[in-house]
Image (tube, rainbow, N blue to C red; front, side, top):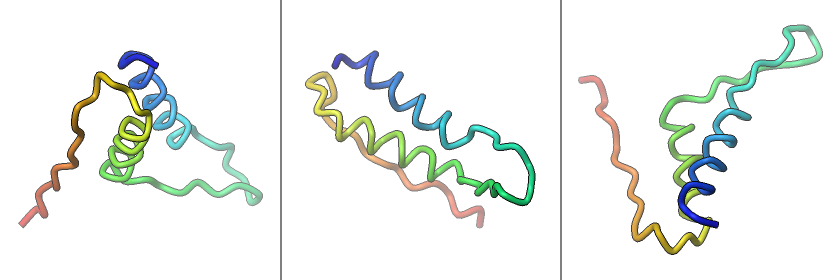
Length: 65
């Protein structure tokens, strides 16, 4: 896969995690934090084996203090 395909794949993964579910007693929607979504996308990108990606690094966010 090329870089464009990998980024699309990571985007679809995030969309699937955020996709709304019909609100009723049989379904539960679990919130995923932005860092969690970013982490999922980076894992997908890193595990792709795409030769166009030389390095990926997760930079910690601020703690809000």
